[in-house]
Length: 171
Image (cartoon, rainbow, N blue to C red; front, side):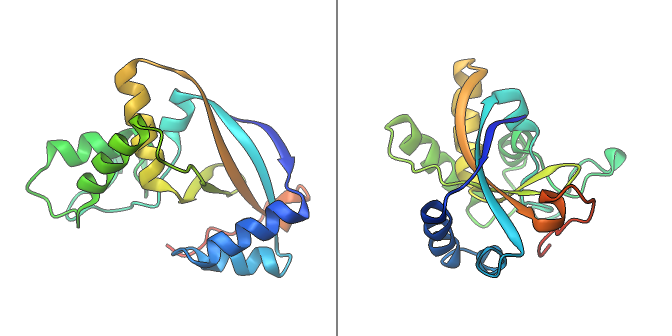
C-alpha cells in the first residue's frame, strides 16, 4: 500500500505540474492546474506491493497481459521477465531503456519522480514506468523487500472527496 499519504503543498503541486507538462501525461498537469484533481505524496514500503502496481503498458508487440485474469495492463513485476523471455518481439527499445536505468540506479543517478493515478479501486502508474521497473528489478535481484519509494498520487476530486467516480486517463 501507499503509506504516509499527505496532500502536497502549493509549491510541491506547482513544481509537479511544471514537470508533468513536459511528459506524455501532460493532461494530468492540466487537471491539477484546473483543480479537477488533488496531488498527494506518499511512500511505498513493500517491493511486493510495488511489483503489483499496474503500468501504462497494455501491449508489447503481440504480447498482452494475462487474459485469464482480465488484466488490461502489465504489472511492474511482469515487465522485465516478459521482455527478456521474448527477445524476438519488437519493444521499441523498452528493455534496453530499462537496463540503462537499472545501471544508473545502481550508481544513484536516477531521479524518482513517479506519478500514480488513484483510480478508486486501484492505482496506475502514469509517469515513471520504466524508472519504477528498473528500481523494482534491482531490488528484486538484491532480495530486498523493505523499501522506501516516494511517489506522487493524483486523485480526481470526486475520489478525494470519497465518491466512487474515477478518471482513468487516456489509454
